[in-house]
Length: 259
Image (cartoon, rainbow, N blue to C red; front, side, top):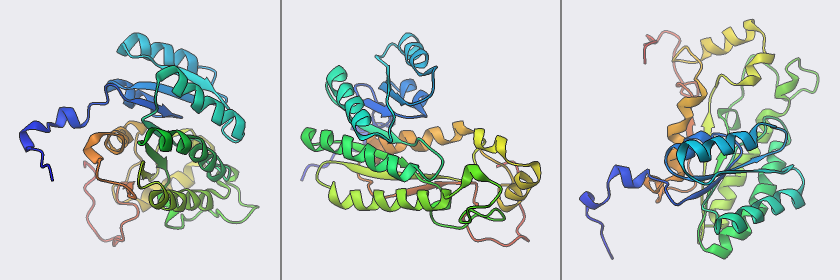
């Protein structure tokens, strides 16, 4: 058994993604910033090619955008295969597109395509975006009934729970050649919140012990960790980033709003 001396395994080396090819459907900036060659898979975002070109110019790494409807098996498979042809390999897939009941289907198709590549290569890494909603029931909104007013969140919990269980199953089936982990955000200030009333936002905020929503950039560190060598012995984990939303607590607990 070979043991690595601590002084030879630096933090800079662990988190450096230079030479890695990362296929993502969002959070692309994170990986470009640390030296990865980024491929952006998109369906309806017209600015994706411009973003990829800007990454290439700014970071000096090859970055490309590939248009594909990830609900169509042939399209996602063709996109993944094209990435491998263009870059010579595929190290990481970050699957976090979608925010409705279709996401579970999209995740399965992602896995079907990248799994074949990873098995052939003998290595790979998948990071799913699940949610705190995969393991608890959000309130006060209704997310199981078809007639609730928050249509954008219809069946959200069920789809996220499906993603989480899919990841757990793949951990076992792909253990010989691929790591699989999940990131479960809490309430993040994304476009979804634009469809929600101020009254509902206030109720959500009051349920969070940190008493605030998170800016999207606060997720960058955990996604980087999951895809870097710093987490090379981690597979099958689900990391919550939720401002202590999912942690049982008493309303009487004193809140430190500056954290």
